Image (cartoon, rainbow, N blue to C red; front, side):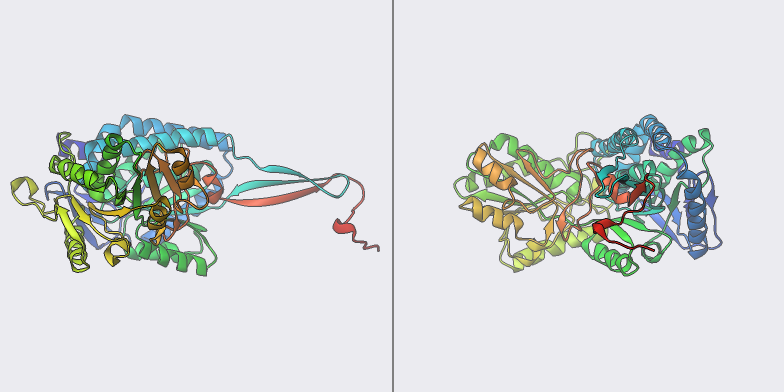
Length: 511
């Protein structure tokens, strides 16, 4: 695979401009820069220039002007633009998927799958553009009619994370766009090339439809730009994906100005294995859930809660399965596991294993940083199996690395209590052929997560089902169901078509 050709085809040169309002890039003098290296082979990808305050304000002002135009487009016309974006993504799927894989380290299949998610949300949004339904209500007053309708908010700020460098933008931007909003996107400072590539792909659609600058904007930057967006009263909604610590800061700042936020934060996801589980099927879900994307998904399986009667068998099966994993270049489809994003992630992996041991846990497999020519970046680690207790401090903490904690239970009530006994509440799963156990897991006294699955792993919801979680996961919902309402403001209208003015509740006010 010719990475340099892929970068060229996607318009990624030696330097990425700090901001774009669509077709136009914004350039600044003497910007702060960051060199971007691939975790796959430690080779340079590009250098990104970070936006300054002046460039950021230019983007916001352009977006404000675009909103004044875009909101006049009928929603189905906005859907047509999104349809064309989906087609542009289809045409560039192979290249963009490869770039995602190379820049953040997930397998090529996962990179391609992420772009397919973008295409799927475009399809979903196109249909939704004709279904932004309000309600009609009866009034207690004669000759009156009441209804509610939904209007766009204005600018939607999108802050995405490195682990899904393009899909999360699309979940938000495509729904926001058909609702009549404009978007300002700050990609992760660790994966700026993927963000720039998407912006370049959009340009053909923007140009073909003669759309104004500012509907889809991109601002490159680090924490400073994220803070500026959170504080900016010109941005009524911030959708932020990342760590719980980051999300709490966004919630505090945006809430202080009474803005709106959609938060997609940490996960600490568990699978429960009952005695009636189909273990052959479960093994696939467990291993992929725990080691896919090198454990850097918010829906990664981090805890495995196993019935005591099958614990030893499952433990031995997992050790054998982990021994068969192929670790290496994620662009090689023969490999199962690629690298962590950077050295900081490697250090977090090692620190977590050290803390586990200090708390009395036991490493069953892994706990090793790989070296050699094929692991030149220093970011490759062995997926790790551990025996642990749910109350361990390190188990309660989400480590963005392929570490799976095994623990036992005797009753389903105990298992559900363990599953729920963390501060995060994103995804959960149970493997069982016992109908009563499955239904209890899905009940109000079952899993407390935003996503609860039966006989599949801790995956996210498919496009069309709202994605998100509870507790310290932030409570946000994206990409399906009625999540579109988060990008709009509700307005209640009352129309009097009579010739008198009766007041509600029978109030008399005669003049």
